[in-house]
Amino acid sequence: MEKLTAEYDQFPSAEKLDWMDTLVLLIEKCDEDRSPLAEMDPITLLKTLMRENGINQQQLAAYLDISKGHLSDILNYKKGLSKSIIRKLSDRFKVDQKMFNRGYGLLAK
Image (tube, rainbow, N blue to C red):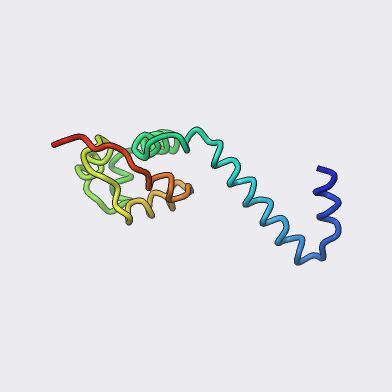
């Protein structure tokens, strides 16, 4: 830690901001990689994020601009996540899109 602090003190003001931004990105990446959320399949992740954020199906369906039935099919492994839904979920829950863009099994119809 002392070495990082010593290096930080050597940079001019503008470079200090860049240095801090880089350090924050590295810490966030490390936290993300070690998160138990990273191990979940996308639907379990979605259900967990909904519960943790106090969002019900109706609210999320409205946010995603899809029907409640469509969302129910997604949550019950009957339909997959589209690219646009993945983007919206990523924005809403502030997680990397790759967390939702992983393979998982759908139930046969």
